Image (cartoon, rainbow, N blue to C red; front, top):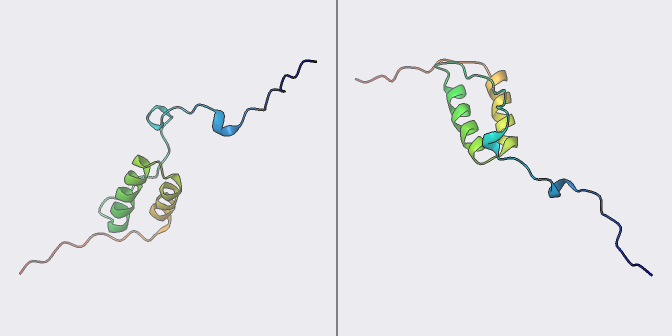
Amino acid sequence: MDRTLPSRPTRRHDAVLEPASERAPCNDPEPVPCCLTCTRMDEERAEAHREQDFRTVGECNREILKHPHRKMRAAKFS
């Protein structure tokens, strides 16, 4: 009697993923120039991309798109 195991279905974690650097570029929204919030979110988003934290990338993208865009104020020196 032949006791071969049935082939198991392919699981998602068995798949070989290509490195993030070789994937198609994402469509991140452009930050508004001179907007403090956009600048901060863009920096946080870049770090999240490096760490492959795509949930944070999405949160930063939503914030860039939906917040009121206020310009940075020039520092006052006396």
